[in-house]
Length: 504
Image 1 (cartoon, helix red, strand yellow):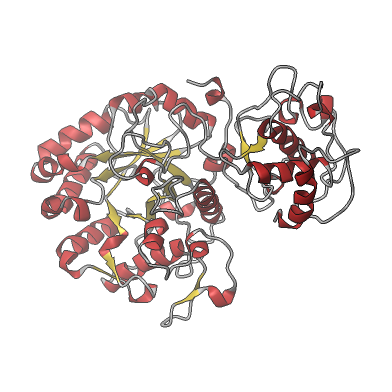
Image 2 (cartoon, one colour; image 1 turned 45 degrees about the horizontal axis):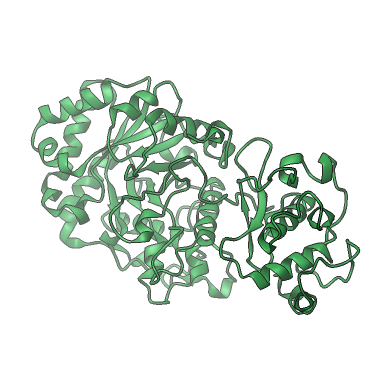
């Protein structure tokens, strides 16, 4: 396990925010949780997983099983957990009260309250993935609830089952949405149970798939929570309500689908949502930047407690899919690439969590770095390097021949130094680490030998604070911060002139 795993990382106090007590209605506070899948070739030990959760201040998780090792490791951690009855166990639990009671005894009573189990997910997307279990789904839920009732835990631990949004037909406009009527014999008693037990409807919301399957009807910005002008927002013709993102539209479609069946007071808990950071050639929008954008915007949206247009101010707590990239998961590359972290605890990307652009990094000293993107075009790197050492007003003398950061003598290494110096001169503003797309923020220290980067020594050369007003990399300013543009060839002077305006 990488040593920095145990440092306060990436999400910091984000996940601590405003969760209600286990017995409180779920709409009293907004929180973000994470799902933890286990299809990894090098799955961390439960104690390592919990160490990462603690370091990240992640206070809500969902497991796809009730692994005893994880439940023991979670004891006395304060982390609230949803455990799951796997789909392949539903038939037995749905057909036998004693089987359900034994499951609860073994997986709940044996660990509670040291391990804070807040809910039991009875299966996952059963109605779309295991149709033969549909007839016993509600029976299984009721049998589990009866077992909790016998243990006096029914008010502390909710019971529900996650549904796929594919069960909701005609989802836009949301006011016309309804559940697939062929499933009403299951949906109606399910909703009746949730209402009578003050539980929530679990729903998995994936704007990524809605976007991919829309054939261009759904704009990418709408799927990613990016700001869009009012005239581009989707409008529900029946209610005249405007929707600025696909997530809210799908949650409201869920509310309307329940209302269509006369259930109007069941809260929604989003048990899965996210965006893949890699994809096959036919998935061009499964990228690091889009995954970062979606999850960062999702987190802000949930924690702002804005609710949805139909239920403004009603928190829709959400679990991000997922904690780790799952390299052994079946399916395409995108199926393996939904994680916030790699198995060793390194973040896949650094979430952008505030409107001011600050980034919560992998320790309390905010040690992040700005370096060249892997595979960046060398000519674009050279142009960006020339700009940083010229109009960018940074001191590039350490990368001159004979100086500490000259070796290795290549454009990537020199660009790394220039980019990182500029990034720290501008107060670690992520917008300063772009350079027309050839740079990105990382938590990996690029320092080597005697060449110590700004992120390692504090802001500025030799650990002193650099009090300059650095121009934007988009600026057309002709101000020069060094004696001469750093150059590897005569072509670079022309390149930087032609590309200064392009660094937007």
